[in-house]
Image (cartoon, rainbow over the protein chains, first blue to last red):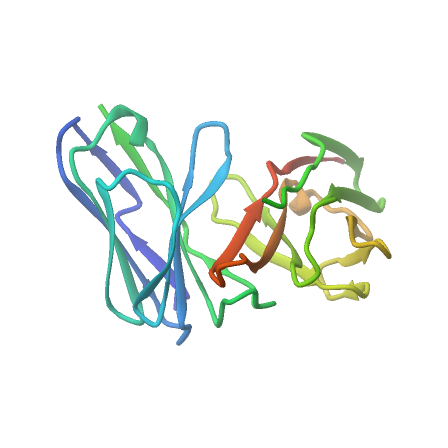
Length: 115
Length: 113
């Protein structure tokens, strides 16, 4: 069984569309994250949820909205997609946060291409 | 904000040890040092982490400087499967109590057969 799964794996869409990426973890972890990796491979954290509460909201456009229906899911919804949103998006989970020593488990990534 | 600095790339031969450095001169006293690696077309994978003392696990060793301003990830015998981008990461708390995650830009490790 995949520990952290994301759907879809690839997403090609046009500018101005609204899309969602889903993430699920079956590890029983309390904390989940969304990261963006651009074409230069820089990995930047976007959001973090701990027990369904937002605990990090880095400086990302408000077109991006994370939604956590329960502890095992953290979905990423993107409105009015722009060319600059093209990237690989990774979901991750962790047993804890708060400056913790816990490791993170990453999903396989969703490659978003905006045309 | 605390930052990490890593060389852009390093090269090694198979079966030889590899030392991957990371500088984090502005690390705070409660920040943990984590290392992850990312194989091509995959998500990052946890390697090791530590706070003050050196750490060993089945994948690697982590040597932390006494002043904690730098650390070194050690792969004892590099294999072709170790070719990846290695990220040095600080995890801790901001002054406001929220989680702090600071990524380095990563070191691309090439392993020659």
